[in-house]
Length: 356
Image (cartoon, rainbow, N blue to C red):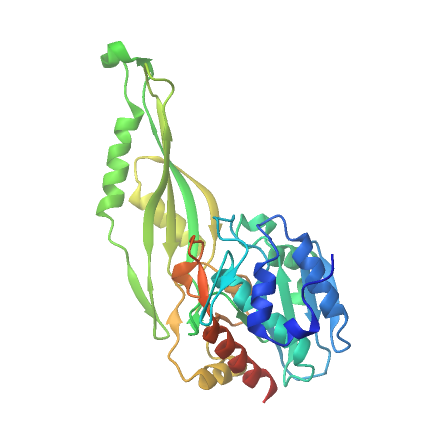
């Protein structure tokens, strides 16, 4: 099959977005899109290209005093009757249009068409961002080739609707367990219903008041919510165990350890198991390339309410922010879409930052 990323498509970020959207790449199935991206990057004499798994890395080696990163993930969430794309004169619909193939298209467009940037640039087109952290392409690069992540500043082209979203929240998942005594449902007084005991856990969640904190002018709002409940043995058995899975989105002024301590305080008296955790990222807007980028946008940055891979760079001491054309409120929805003029404006701004 010929590569759909033709020279005519690569020079047009809107057409490139549609071409990427029309390559199905649900997490774990990125080979086809990674092959296509690798092929076009390897044809560029100004780039040095490497591949780790289904993550493609392209670097300029121009001897500039500073290096920046542009990164976009290749994968999407599962399709929801929204593939392939459709488009009119203003909007493109389809899985991944907002999160984040429009942003990834901008990075790929610049990688191919901007051979002489004023910074050295490392471009990452990476796999498995939408699933568990162990499969994340940037994590794998960091584990195997950490030197490739080194930079003075990083931009993740996650959907922000064309504004700068600084830092990100941390995220933590945990299981809160209640226990009881199993018995026949006809003689329930001989048992102790663990599902009924979950009511107190849910009450604490219902009464929970999320903290808000302002950092470098960006307001982060925390959230603690139940996302799943499991329990039960059979239709005639009083259950002796129940689990409530909770998700805690915490402001980046908390460490993971502090977040875990907070959960244990909220659910004091119950068994709690932390099952997954990723740190937040402070705004980090003081680096010179970041300041130049913000000056070019002319807008006040907002807090990123969600977790993104900016945290991966922040953990390495590399300032990073989120900037992309998609609307984050449309991410993962059946009617996911992106405005065509947002793609064009984002590509123009990033080109002026890199090339002017």
